Length: 266
Image 1 (spheres, rainbow, N blue to C red):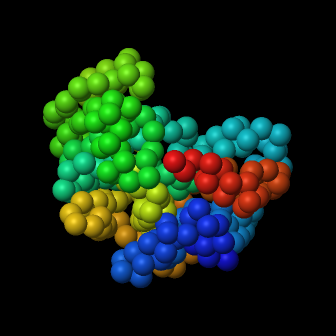
Image 2: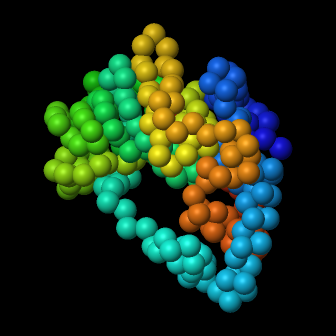
């Protein structure tokens, strides 16, 4: 069963599902938002991992982190040492065009690395951008605007930083490298970012265009439908985690995943 079909049964997500379905047709995307919610992709991942790594699972099935590490080592990947600086709250596109690279396939809201454009750093997600502006104007939300070019911060305006830890904001603004965080624009667009993420390869470039209405464009890295359905847009580390959870019957219950998603809504 497709991700969006499952989520359409939840009234809180009705508008988000409808918009995601519309965008999936316009952009020719598979209507899926995460591998754990799509039976076809999940089964393909588990089948492939069983064939390749069942021996490693049998040896290290008592420790998830160790199992994942051994899978990566077998493929010569080793542990990921990210050069990204993580912003643990929300990154809200602010310019007419914001360019990002989508990362990770198991997170909603989806995560992205900011390549170009201007964003707001927000402590909380809001129903819409106008609600965020109201909160900023009433001083109920921080007011930090950051501009990026080629993944690096080129300018920022820090009028107020109360709710987000000041030291964290300072760390972000003084970073010399790329910044990643949860992409957020509104409740209605909540499912579009993870859907795009499932439809692109690791090396991707995605434009978020803010005009009269928000729109999206995949500039680089759009995956074939076959690769999406096989699970080839999911990286090996995430596949190993999914396989481990499936084998140990942990954390893959769709109802739990969906309730966790709904709990994040403003």
